[in-house]
Length: 230
Image (tube, rainbow, N blue to C red):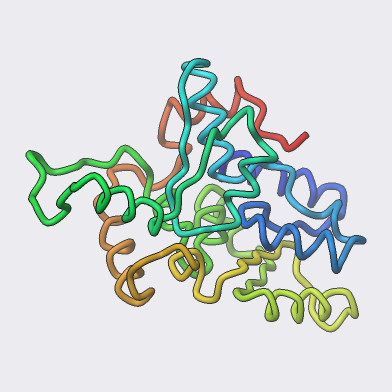
């Protein structure tokens, strides 16, 4: 996702356009409904959920894909991308399944889970997570010069977009998240966001790779699969 986002960001800069993120479907909906003049500025990169679904389907067309997370807006987004995501569960949904089937999560696993995800991929649900992850794949000179803004909570997103529209605020890149404090505080989550933030940050540090450009499979996927929103 972040490699594709970087490519489109550089293209937008060459064309003199500002760009907003495409990972939060509720934020994307806000832009389309209340700031239609900025719809062309929304990144054309599919969200991490859709990108991952496309990657899995490309490897195994018969695979059934399920996104599990705290976001209820992803349920609507999955309907818009049936080629990538078959269905979506929130953590609340998953907890109901565990309780209904008698799965006891307090029992320790047979062996410790080792993530294959990158630190950037794990950290995107945090505050400024997408911005931080994209900056990691930018050249050092672009990281230093990047003019970026961030807002979480739809009212704050709307306020900052209004400031950009009126010329009171300038930014070549704007990251908007519908949920205050980022995805870790989404309505389908079960834990208090402060605790979740600590746990995600701790898990992020266990990743062997920092960014997706360090993973050969991810680099090949960007070359061979279209992650552009049609």
